[in-house]
Amino acid sequence: MIILQVQDIARFNGENIFSGVNLNIQEKSRIALVGQNGAGKSTLVKIIMGEMAADEGQISEKKNLTIGYLAQDTGLDSNKTIYDEMESVFNSLKETEQKNS
Image (cartoon, rainbow, N blue to C red; front, side, top):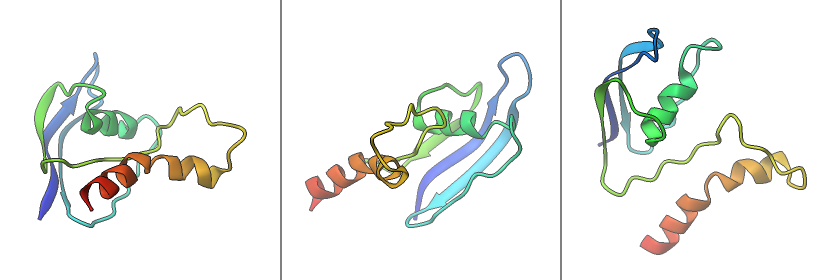
């Protein structure tokens, strides 16, 4: 079952950052977004998360889908371990799981 579908997403911002991005993510899949610096990886994630608008295209997601990610510029808490910081990304997922169980 597809839980997230990205169709023909484009972002220009005065220049062509990326265009024609298509992606289907299946339930229980794990993905990695890999590319050179400045390729638009963070921009694409922000568009998927709804933090930034795409100039073209459409995103469809399964109802009640919760997405977690560790932002590039997080302002890490020096009192936490790296593991604790990474684990904090999933707090909303844990809350949703507890709520639905």
